[in-house]
Image (cartoon, rainbow, N blue to C red):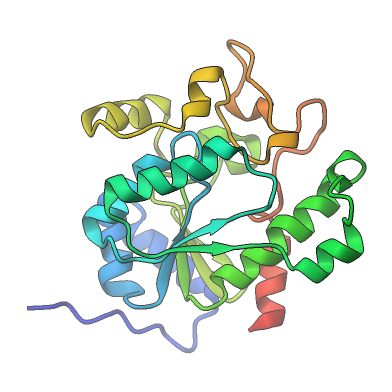
Length: 249
């Protein structure tokens, strides 16, 4: 018997719905969280967002086992390492993922605000806004919810990360929120998952090539992102995305 999708309570705000879901399902294993969200709570209205970065294979493998046709949104900023683009295609083939959706920055915005492609040198936040936040808002807008691979250990801004959280009028789900580096490594080995080749060179958190550097031994993985700056998030996981989605709703 196929379980009926969970119907959202029209009287609940997204924040209230996220809190209810987190209380009910936040303690489940990552795989069980994915099954609950994809097959019941948000059936037919959920996607995943993946950077195809250092440990993206873990979440994507779990998703492929639950539903290989689940849409996976990849944000092509125009500044990715070539290795990441090749890895995206190879890993998707490995896992049998059949619906990779590539979103890109608005060309008119690039022509107006970053015609030379060097905005990252003077305004990293502005660059992330047009190359990441705005296109990501477009990418997830058709869905009620989406999965991410974020973990609490990755940064101070993620230390209290819930499994279910509200983003504007929608729900973001972080099945791996409670996992640590050993959990990820064990899972990668157990399932013989393909690794982004940049990891072997010391890139432990992989984003756009101008703003990603090799991590020094013993340093936090995200120290290689925007090195030398106070910036530790690109913006797609900060309030700006929720504001963009609220405006679009």
